[in-house]
Image 1 (cartoon, rainbow, N blue to C red):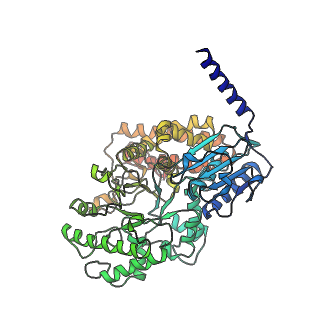
Image 2 (image 1 turned 90 degrees about the vertical axis):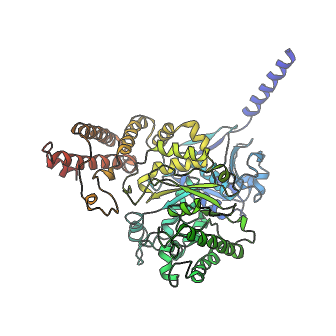
Length: 600
């Protein structure tokens, strides 16, 4: 027994000596950062290095120098199978081999930081992980979250950080962009003579955000107000630059924005019963054009824009047409993309009336991902059966934190409760929805926190579960505003989400969207007592006062971020409630109309 104890002690002593004899990885303010990275790396890796350069300059007031020589690099960056540099770096790469989009950060015995990826995206995410570690927010640009300056940053000699995604395809859908992203893009951010154009400069900012959030998939804007993604030169090229898979929504098969493109490129009616040759040619043009790029092909067919297909009336007729559509679409993929069509990423989305056709027995090829949807208000309508879970193509989900449509929209403020997102997406994963997660984000800006929560869960669900949704939100606030302010702000945000869960600010007029009955177009009373109204107004008043108090104490460099993420969302919701609930009381002589006018 004493010999075993002696051996254990010696092993421990040698381990301590080993670590003690090694060097930590160190970055210092004003000192150049040399990175060894081979020229054979894919474009997205160099894109990530360019972002890291910007981040290092912000934090340390210095720049990175990229060299292909490992001896000169403080940081060694490389992809398995692409780089000899990481093979010789003295770090065990086996934990990430044969994984998709995995990365490893490890400090070598000489104090160098090795960033290795299992593929091009894994390496890029590893580079972006260093940005996170030095204190750069994913919302650095989108919420003006300027990182704090640092004099020094260290990782210990024993440091290891290995990550890989829970969900294979993770991303966002820009939708209902009419009032925000589209006019801002073509009128302000990249002015254009083409009305409604969202160009490559705007998409570069979107894709930068996705790369920082470790997302890899994008469904472009598709409303009539926006120029279709592929009609604008440079858009598809910038997607490749950031390693982004381009997909399309439930009514846009074969990489076509049918709503915006059929009127230019289509011939006759968009009808596969009476005009299949022209419709098939319409799809074929785009598949030929993008065949070599990273795409997720949506299969099937609906109407031109979020409506039932033309030419087939009954469910059985629609099933017959969709069966032919699926066969013909896959023939195009076999011809232009890959002779083995089972290797082409494909998705079928049983949304609205298509769900009825699917339930009527439509046969979807086994390797095609089935994507399920929520009810537009955050509750998933269908979870996979045992047979659906066993499919080779797996299952996906299309989820909303922004919505336009019946019975009411919520596009203005990001008020979907984080606990609802967490509960529903955890349940989705547990029930086999693990292949693809797409989030309808509207214009991005109203829903920053929900976007981050959703994509963090898609990246590493177990990590978010261990942390818990409340702690996750706390980390978000602490990263942006510091520990002390996070202590005070989290109860404010939790209460704001709770009040909005009872009734969203957009719903306070008791009206409805796209409702034929004229009574729902007129603002009317909510079924709340005077006491309930006063209690709700008092609760919002308290929140608004607390938010204003923090605003006054904030340093100047944090005011922009605070306004976007806290002040405007909370105080705007408070004033919308004040405007309409005070009016409801005033109609009964219980309040002053001037208070409602002031809120307006």
